[in-house]
Length: 597
Image 1 (cartoon, helix red, strand yellow):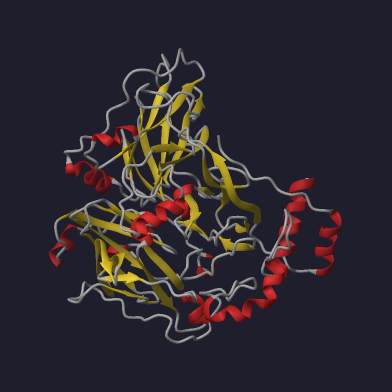
Image 2: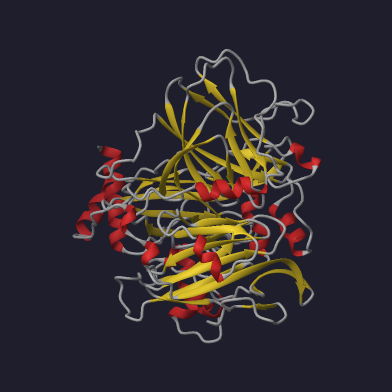
């Protein structure tokens, strides 16, 4: 059920070579190496053959299962027919925005090339996922789950579960990502998805009239009386999904790296790009199997009836297959149901997380806000004859030279540090305008949703505090409703239509970080901005240097000539630009210990 990653054996003489030539090159924290080939694969999750993006022949991709403070190296071989970047949703990349995998920080990996991501999952725990960040590719796969385990010295704030299950739920279209990309560019709405997938599989045939026969579906085998941790990620492109398991309670324990106050829910609205962990106890009589559902939310059309994700929970002592109607979703007419549910999610301020000290020792409500941005989104509109979406009237225009490289090499004119802190009274425009974030300042951002659909916003490099949300227009008086003690810290938040959501961010992670709409059509058409966080004191203690294996593009393309020969590959093998002898040596020894212990 869970994907695994295999490790290619290494010869003993390579280990001896490393030990002989690279003395003193090993750090205290372990290294984990993954070798991924990204290519197209033909599957039929909804009964229609189509190309998906697979990793190592797996759709969805392999599970990245590591422990906090580990050094992670992922060598990505791009066998697609277009450039590729992978981004790591919720991974903070402390001091290292070079590895973020978005266009503001990285040149895309050209078709036929490979590139090695190198980052440390420093002081993080929890449930996250990765996905392709360019060319609308997430619409056809390339995603997978990430687990960052706690170190043994830091106890879990709940009993150790009897099993760990990753679920990737997503809206799904039988059109290719290239077709969906063209439609979006033309202003064509994505429309009703063709189905909802569980881990890349179509629905169980709960209704003969709606679900074709012989579709493969997900079945999860469980033992009666045991408790399992379900890590559920909405990796779709535009649809909020309601997750529920028939007759079973969902005990929420974690979301995107933060332990939560433990509360039972019968269902949970999981919006695009969001991740949750639930403990589920198998306490039913198993007279039959049980439905696991993921159904679209905030829709009012019968055309959506076929878009239902259904997997099966199978007790080992089950008396028969699941039958009868699916468990009821929330009432669509109750507009506050989902918002009140979101407000009820609170931070467990007494639990330890990745570090020994309690999370609650960071009393965010007592810190003075330095800067405030009220960011208003708008539906797609025509700008210079093409469809674009905007934040504060600006549709982000990605330059050919990544912002991070332009800053590193002092290239003028690539971007402007003039993103407005509120909507300006001027026509919408295309621009490369970014936010100038002061190092160790405390920023307040209010997202005001002027669209007709739920939007999710995500910030790379950070976990921010979700302190308030409500319908209507945010005003300064709205601050009186903020939760200033145990608002949950996470990397994404939903903003309901005609409503606002407020977050607070402590800008202590140096780099250029992407703030974006997770809804893929909104993001692709321009709803993103970058926050530039600079430490005036230049030191590798707050930001790591330019990686050895940097790919250059745009105005810096001439610098790429020599490296192109080093990273281009053919066939199944390639030289790995691991970015330093220390990393290579640690990798070899780590693999040696794994293979021969």
